[in-house]
Image 1 (tube, rainbow, N blue to C red):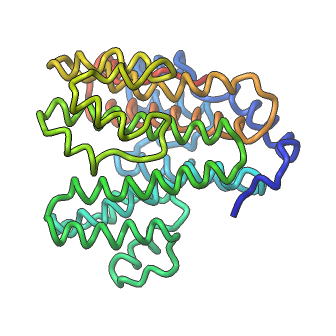
Image 2: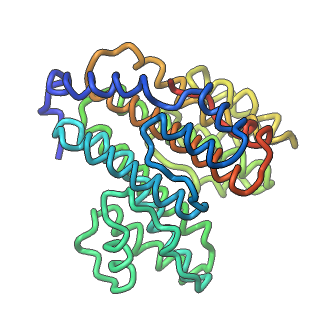
Length: 334
């Protein structure tokens, strides 16, 4: 159901609260303090300054569980405002599809996937698991149910988890764009289209690096981005280069690195540029006082914060050097 019946003015108080919260979020300086902390316990204490629960003594699995609980709590608080529900749902969506992909792939590996399921989706991980085991999927959102059913069929038929994942991602992007459109906010919709463009750019580069035929892109790219799928396929067929179809915009830096990667260069900078494109997009929202786009920006900042926390703390727990962790971090939203 469309939620553009809500006015941006309905979000005034929530957005004021979110702007205030941003002042207490993890900053690059605090992240660097966590990296330089004498031990893991001290790093956890620094994190507590940003409003996180005490996670001292946590291993990697406990860390993930506590981060999921923290995220779910924040999502719940924001969703208490009706006009913010759809934007929050867009962020919860990816965890639903992560859970479906994990369960489907467990068929081929005979592994128990429940340990890696996320509690941050719209549908509880218990409900998703039950739907997977019983085959009764009427209670799942339509696209999610289709992704699960088609994923099971695809994996049973092909034994290829990559094809199953692409199928699930197609449903994810379809639902994401549908939700974004339903907000009636052009900035929120533009965010969804940018994610599709970014996914298509990464896929194009992977396919070209693997030396696969351009025809492979027919089933691997997703509709709905700013760049037409047909244009990407034509560029691959003609060998024209990706820069002929991606011109300007937040992905410009990633596009400039794509040809280097295809020629055999390192992928690290390219992947960072793709991730940072979303941060560049969010910059245009920085000074908006209220509206669904402000909720979007806060949730993007939260995503960056929690990803950064996970990378730092999981790395510290595993004994990875601070310099190695630092190389993997993405540019901050705050």
